[in-house]
Image 1 (cartoon, helix red, strand yellow):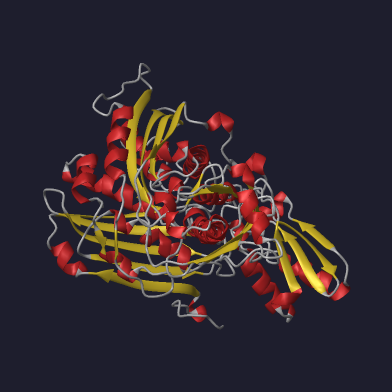
Image 2 (cartoon, rainbow, N blue to C red):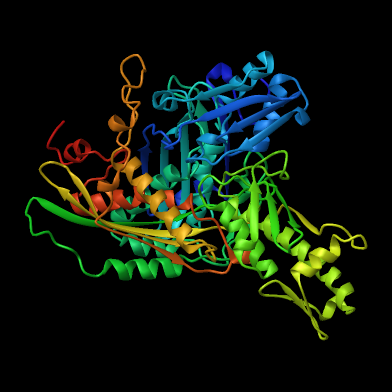
Length: 615
């Protein structure tokens, strides 16, 4: 077996990947603690359940192969298919069609290579669409993990040591077998500031359906483990959970030293937290919950409890991700934006157009976009790791900025003025001291026989800078002490995504991400018979949340911060929204019923077992 870089694999020992690291001296840290706890938290296998299953259509156009696909990664798909077929990339075109949900599962090449091979060999078109059952058993799912967290703290609640041991099952193929379990550490441990931290990650092959990427990418499980362990530690110390978090949490200006050993398959680097909205998120969440007023049920069989969690994620992979875009000024002064980004229904196309329109001082309807087509748009690593707004959006913004420079240069010739005295202004004109010229006239001048040709701006965006989105999630549950039934009465998600570019789309991402992970926490679980065959591979039997499962009072709020690195101060929003439900619900259930549930899903049977009412 050949790996592009060391991932700690040992197939002879059934290990797909492994990594260890840390900062400080973990033994010293635990020796300084007055209280040490160690807990293990487990997740079940859950499916991504995009409404549109995986689908591909391939055909020949002359001597070239064309693939229409529901994919998050058009350029990776082209590269891999060319390698599989043994042909050059110029013979392959990938067109990302409108995607009916991906959630990470459409990062992997699952059926496109089969279709492409059939078409390349026979010359005939091939169409292939997964059934829902195939989507369950032959597609990537969440990695199954057991995460052990050991925490040490002094009597006042200062964390002196943190240890996280992640053991994951990757299924038969090892998709994302290093990076997903690693993310359980890298997106949770930096929430708590501690000088002595250690982690071990081991991923095993397993006789289960394939696993891979899923929205949150390991972080929901890491957050569940660490935040629930913090809540349990607070109880052991006799300290309020909120007080324990406040004593130890990340803040603006914190240097995240732990990131030095949490790189994605390479050496990482410490990074500063340049913007963090946790102060405001916690303040507003406590206010919305009326935190000082303990709710009481008027039914003697029902207990009410509340919980919360703080969460974080990233905005793409600095030093690894790469996005490109170019934008053309058409003959009538309108624009065509060519973005390599792959919109999955997340609104990336809208965000990219909005950035370009802001730069060029025109209404959005004057800019059209083509995206995710390997023939007509430039390279982009793809839509994953919450990279869309930060990377693809930045590329579109910078391309428009480059075009604006060229527009000013052409306008300077027309107005016979220096560019330094010119300004692009709404609604698409360049004004100077002696007059103004419209984008229409600029385009005509550029494309006339004496002009410089069609004006075009280009950008290639990479960065080493991190932009961390944060959030605080609060919930209230009612637990029936006789049946174990759990009702989510309130759920408030307070999210810092920097400057929201499209607030309505951002709120939609939050609501979707939260409800998805309420499902993981309370209902969803792939179930298997004694032979390892999935017995509930259809939506009606699986337990995906539906409209009737919405919390009675469900609110999402955007916390505005100004990130210095994100485009117009923006950070990511969708994946971080998935990280709060499990730990917030777990602490709320304990507050209500007095039991800790440490395994997804939090079923009524587990509540009753914790209460000692069943065995």
